[in-house]
Length: 457
Image 1: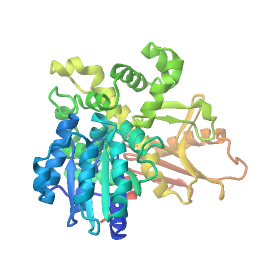
Image 2: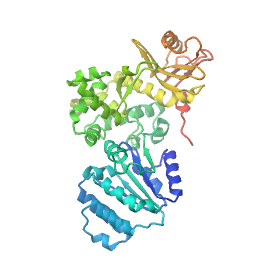
Image 3: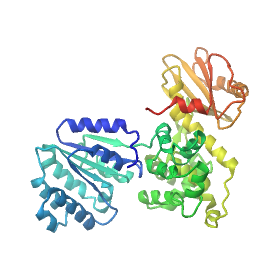
Image 4: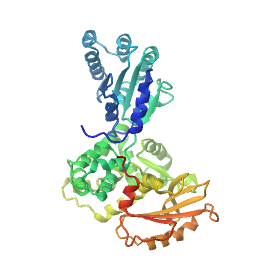
């Protein structure tokens, strides 16, 4: 089995719950292939319990499969041949045969598929919990990839299970420092390029790891009609939404730089007021993000694609599908460099800046005003420290020139201008000269950046 990476916090919390020796209901959710199944399997190592993974099929088949698994696990001859047609019947029977004074875990993976086939399962499960499991030593784990269904049918206040969960975990993609451990044979720049295309999704990283370089990975898995990622976004969206064409059009519009609702609506050919429910759904599922300039007005937010796979795919695969189908696709290096530059900025803001700060930041983000923009700003209200940073996905960057340009823009940032303590940072692949530019200025090349968030040994 492939080495288990990260998830220390989640495993520790699960172990704490197990050690309490009381009933527990745990919800684990997150996008497909983020590592939910592997986390559950790691947790269940050397523990008494049954792990069942549901299929996206009809209720009868799902019921039969779980019944058979439970019959084998419990060595129950009646359950092996019983004709059960409702979830309620299965749970009522289990209430009579499951051990009540013995530590036991029942883990149902892809529970959202069961809800999709029969929403009434949550009511049946709620009754099973209230009448039986809550008075036992059972740990019930429900995991699901259909984010919308898990949020609405399992976690929301409208769900029959509301108020009964012991803990829930929204499993996020791995940070770059951990994702890079999958790509041990890649060079530092190639690791970042791969990360900028698929993010920290473990199964995606395993696909990348079989290739020799990021170029090889892109060519075989994105830019080939039989590649693993050639149709992946279609599948992910179809799992969550019915109106796929509308969502595709919106994501395509945002990938082309249409960041304001009116521009997205015009691109898609729909009315602006009809756009917002779609935007809210994409935001809720973390496919897109809404950003506001630091110190700016909340109503002036702009939209961008947050999900790394979708961002890369809509920039390089979706517009060139005909060329890929004809096997005549050629990657535009300048476009790839521009794209990586954009993702590099996000990576530095999200995963690097907080490691190099000489103060504790209240907030880290972007700033823009009219034609001026600063890639990253971090500040502390209590100490009135502020960091201004620029990110350059380039070799042999002229640090003096970048710093001079940055100093021109910083007075435009209206925040304690007379009393603040200013710090500066420049992040680049490499510098023309990595020189001392003053005590409040720091230069970080690729080696420094990756070292700042070095993986734990």
